[in-house]
Length: 114
View (cartoon, rainbow, N blue to C red):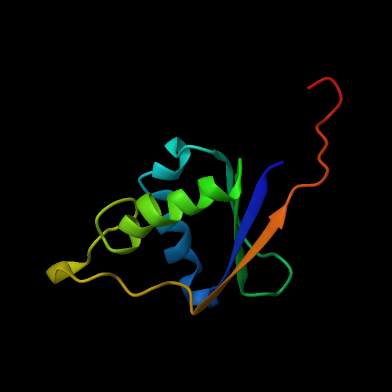
């Protein structure tokens, strides 16, 4: 079964728009990664500062390959989302903290007739 990775990003209210714009303008390299199944950016609505970045992968190996390839390049400024500010410096992170949660899918359901 699939694995789910949830990156929990602590984003102060004044940085929410920045974070959402950065995700909207990303290069979408994750979508063509082998083993990638799903992505969602979840905005908090219940008084927390935590955004959730939900991704689902065929297996742990697929996720690790993405982490060591496209994701690593993006965070070094050479690939997806690797935009540079004026003067060539990386923009300041929108999140003030993050944690990665990992899960295995043990049950799933889809709407009947789908």
